[in-house]
Length: 332
Image (cartoon, rainbow, N blue to C red; front, side):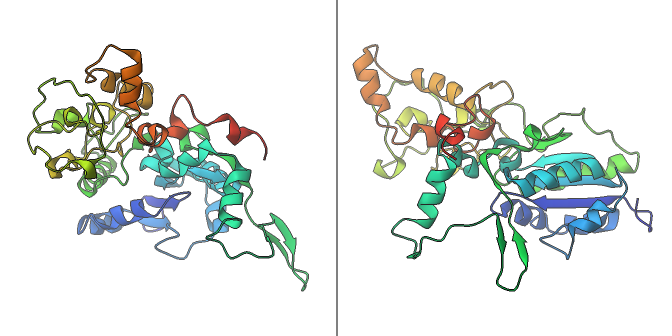
């Protein structure tokens, strides 16, 4: 508790784009409820904050921390451990912290390949071949240290114990508002929090169950990219039109917003409750709609998917059974 008797709130942005921070602000007037119910103790993107201030706090003095972003370097890992130590409830907030999300696709490549791409390709003006140095002393004698880059992106629960998981890229604002309201009620003794380890702010089924499109169990003979379809049937399942839609493997909670506007689900809410590996579930779903028993023909049909790795593990490679390619662990 703070001096004014309010529980403390914290939010931290690790390896991510910042969309989760915007989603929190998008809860509109509900943000005033957060201010009324909590004393914001640490939120670097919204207020001046120093790590030393958090370090000085008593353990478990922060009631609720929303941690968004994956763990890409030693600074991210340090803050994850520090905020775990200082927080009663630590929430893996958004896809990056819970699944790795887009930054996690870097786990297909080695650190060397990533740095070569950033600092030594045609889009980079770097004639002297300068690369970041983790430790460097300026001509004036000032020692500078930048966080060490990790071989792979890791999720928050691969670093510390996590109390709750809130998926989404970013989580839908109405879901955030509902969770905030639940936490406030729980603090006032008016409601009970779900069991530790629960997924909050999302459903337990799949996007397909929320999608109004009709499924006719049709068989397809090729996969196409959505811009290659001249006339998309607004009522028929996109997958059955040969458009790669990840609804069968994706947790619901978004309201199936994308399929309702002729855009395929890309999986931003992560694996559904009973999915052990997202890519494996998608392969099963695709096998169920391919109209062939000939191995060569099936392979040819699957070749219509231009980027299987990026399509099936776009949001969850870091937390999948694959986790990373072998190249990510060697050559650094």
